[in-house]
Structures are given as structure tokens and as C-alpha cells.
Length: 564
Image 1 (tube, rainbow, N blue to C red):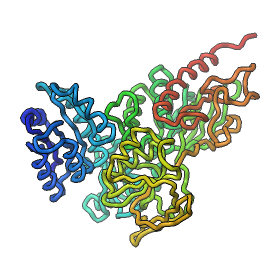
Image 2: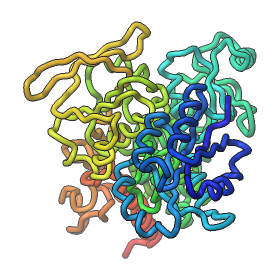
Image 3: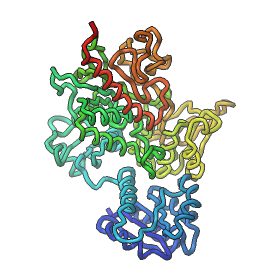
């Protein structure tokens, strides 16, 4: 496969850009164009021969075309390429202001000052960040330390690929008849059950060829069982759920000396981990994918000593009595802990249409799996939901799909979606919003993949059948806490009550629990699972961090002997 293209476009500063991008020439095909017309020719040639384009770097002023018009044309050529505008320092004060509205609307990914000299590492940090994002979400992995062996069209294969993507494990897929497939089959005892997962290098090379029946089973095979914890060990903090709240608690708890165990039933990152780009999270001016945020937080927590067990759903919480340890019961063993943080998050509500439920993994997806987005090239795709997750999914899908239609039951998005996403959607020519519409039916095409949907106007009940190559459902939150005991009170929707929302009969000496405390001493709740939470990544992270200070207070109380 040809090296990905980095295209440099400038009339007056091409020599500066060419010198700055010399360091990338070993692994990228760095091309130079002195005008928008020359750039169009380069991109047309790359598209014709199937050569990927990773990054377009353009001067803010071009000799033959307005930069914004050129950007619009280039997105038509290569919608998956990242787009960077460089501004000479003499014009930066003026143009950083005039271009800001177009940045907000997604006309390009970011702007930077044109480098003034050698080793402008701040500039290159941004460039490598964009290339890393492109590589994680668009490019086929150059490394196959994990090989997936399966025939085409298996729904579980897509789920396994998404799991490995979110875990940051480089992988590639091969057919059973390929040399790589034959190698894996030769190491397998007995008849194959696809997909097979073959670890080929590093610390994973000694693994046998795995034949998981679910992503939970694969996570358990790779990361171990909670029963690996010694029977007589009692940890300070058990965190249930590894979304933003659970990860923040793991980082702060472990860094402050608490023995911390995190139990996750699915994949590190939780629901937020499926977000293609979170642009309003503090400290990431160019945005960060949920996948990357989850990976970084997990690595950070492990550095401080936290232990993670992935693929083990919690089935029961047995509260301790009179300060005795709580017991978190999982399918893979028990964890005894002095304190427990419930951060299990929420799941997207089910659509409830049997014909479409049967196609989950075959064109129908709950959540915004970035892996599935790659499969949507040149398809007409529908996104159901009006929240930020739906908006982020639509923008990412538009890099691949021929068209993306957002279906909502409301009149518009203003009540449920952030303004910056609404603006970016409005400016994207591949995305339409269809209000006052619901799905009432759907079915497969001849290949067994999703082929069509039946839509209904909620006002007139008029129906329409449309062709559909993909459906992504992000339709509200359902809590994950059926495993909690009755002592942990919940609201009418099933979310955990904390603080002053706890019923007064549970208060002690007329005082409510701490603001993240539940009815059960030593059991706390944070993030989307908590009743009244904001359902935002930043607020969930903040609650997870705040819960650790309450855990410290509770543990200190356990060490103080009761008054006579």
C-alpha cells in the first residue's frame, strides 16, 4: 500500500512548510502544491489510484482561490483527511479572529502559527496529534500484533474490532483462507468457531488462538479475573465501571494511596469511549476522542497502582454490616472492599423493533462505534438521537458515508445538543436533520445487512420507505444497576439517589449522606448512573474525583473507635 499523503499548499511560504515537514517524509508521501488548482490535481490523482490522504496543510491565503472555498472542494475529494490552516505571524492577530467562526463550524480542524524557525515542537505536537487521530479512526493498522480471522459479514467480528480499537491494541482482519488465517487455524485444536483472535507479538505472543463468543469473554481472556485477587485481601476502593467517572476515581484514589480495583463489564471508556471527538472537554483545544481519553486515563491509573478487570459484569453487591467490607460479586470472582463507587454508567435505550434488533452488528449499531463508521463508505446512513453523542457520531460518519440523516422526534436540536455541534452539522453538506420523525420498521438487503427503513412523521403519521446502509441508535439513557441491593435507593427511572435526594428515613441523626453518598455507608455513586447528574464527560470526571475525598473521610471514620 502506498504511503499516506500529507499535502502542503501555499503560494508564498511553501519553502517553510516543505522544510518543516521534512521529518515526515520517511513514512508519509509529502506533496507540495503552490496553488489550490495544483492541490486539486494532487488530490484527484490520489483518489484515482486509491492512495489515502492523511493531512492537508494550507496557507490561510492562496494565490488563486479563497482558502475556505478550497477547503470545501478538498473535503469533497477526501472527507477523511485532517485539515490544518497555517497563518503567518504577521497576520495571526487578525486572521485568528476572522477564521474562528469557520473553525467553530468545522470547515477545518484547527489553525496554527506558521513556524518561525527549526524545531517548532509545539507546532509538530499538534501535527502528530492530528496524524495520530487520523491513524486511529481512518487508516488500516500497519501492525497486526492481534489478528482477527473470520469470514466476511460476521456481526461479532465488528464488535471484536471495536473492542480492540478502544483498548488501543493494533490489529488487522484476515480471511480463513489467507496465509495468516491458515497459520492461526494450524494452532487451533478442534474445529474453528469464528471469529478467531490470534495474538502474534510482544507479551501476547504466548496466548493461544482465542475463539471468544462475546467481547466480554475476550476481555476476560486477556485481562484476567477478579478472583485473581487473593481471597484474604480487602481493597480500599472498588470502582464499578470504567467510564469517565470510574477512571477519574481510579486515578485519584490510586494516586492518593488507596488500593483500588476497577471492574468493567465491557470496554474501558464506557459510553464516552465511543465518541469520535469530544471538543468541549477542558484542556484539549483541538478535541480528544473518547477512545483516546479512556486509554490515557487507564494508563495513568495503572501507573499509580490501580488494577483493572475487563469483561466481568457485576451481578450483586452485598453490603457489609457495621463497617465490615462490602462484597462485589462478579461472574469471574468476588472483590471485597471497604468502600465501593458505583460508576456503571448508562446504556442507550433499545429501539424495540424486532426486525432491526435482529440486525444489530449487521448495519444496525447502538452507540457510535468508530470501527463501524469505516464500514459506511458510500452508504446512506441514519443516526437516531438529538444529544451530543448523536451529533458527534453524525459528524464522524460524514467523513465516510455518502449521506448522514439525523432523525429526531422534536422540531429541532436546540434543546438537546450543544450549539457548537448544531453549527457544525448545519455547515456540513453531507448531513441533514429530519425533525418530527421516528423509525417504525426496517429490514435487510439480499446480503443480510441492513437495507431499508420505514420512517413515520410523528405529526401526520405519513410513512416513507428509504434505502439505508447503516443505522446508529443513540436514543437516551437507561441505568445499569439491577445488581444493586434494595438498600441502595433509586429514583422512579432507576438512577441511584445520593445526598439530599436520599429518602429522609435513610438519614442518620437527621443528616443526609454526603452529596455523592447513598443510603448504604461506604457506597457512593458518580457519573451518569447518579440521579440528577448532568450526563456530561466533564461532570462525570469531576464527580469521580470528588468521590475519592468522601472515600477518605469514610475510611478515616472506620479507623476511629466508637465513643463509649
